[in-house]
Image 1 (tube, rainbow, N blue to C red):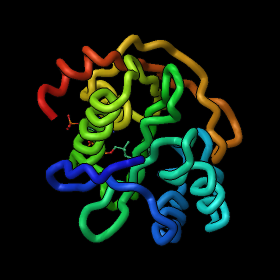
Image 2 (tube, protein in one colour):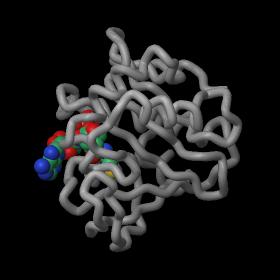
Image 3 (cartoon, helix red, strand yellow):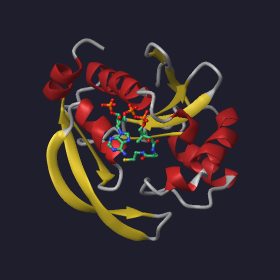
Image 4 (spheres, rainbow, N blue to C red):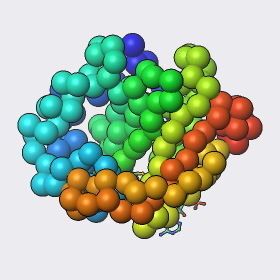
Length: 179
Ligand SMILES: CC(C)(COP(=O)(O)OP(=O)(O)OC[C@H]1O[C@@H](n2cnc3c(N)ncnc32)[C@H](O)[C@@H]1OP(=O)(O)O)[C@@H](O)C(=O)NCCC(=O)NCCS
């Protein structure tokens, strides 16, 4: 179901079982996990296997989660959510890969794929207020309608203040131009 999408410097592709040790190592870093809602810390290979079991490309109602691959292998994951009315956009990159525009580049391609190939008209996302890099990525991709909310963060074991945002198909197309 999920295709391979070249983005310029990266390729989005289905996650495969051989990726799971790398997923475990990269998302196991506290600085990554502490920004994500559902990710336990510490993170084990069995956590990665459980996530993959629910979300492998062939699972019809799973997250549509792409591996972000830089040519040497998986460097992060980007999901356009489950196939429901308002799917949820989420992403993370291993710490060594931050600060090079990769999340924005991968996001344009993943959302372009979603709006091009499915009838979805909106997608939801959100980030902690202490995560300005992620809030900036969402803004660059065209997300808006900001609302405050409390985001449960499993690695902290508490809810923290965040900003909930929504992307409309039209706003994405005008924010990103051709993808
Ligand atoms: C959030 C994350 C995916 C961003 O990835 P990235 O590839 O570094 O993002 P990009 O380079 O595409 O864009 C980041 C933007 O935020 C800006 N930025 C980075 N740190 C910032 C900070 N502390 N304050 C303000 N802006 C910041 C960058 O300058 C860039 O904006 P620019 O293009 O205008 O220069 C990455 O940091 C990550 O994986 N973090 C841990 C997991 C996570 O937070 N996931 C998202 C959960 S909502």
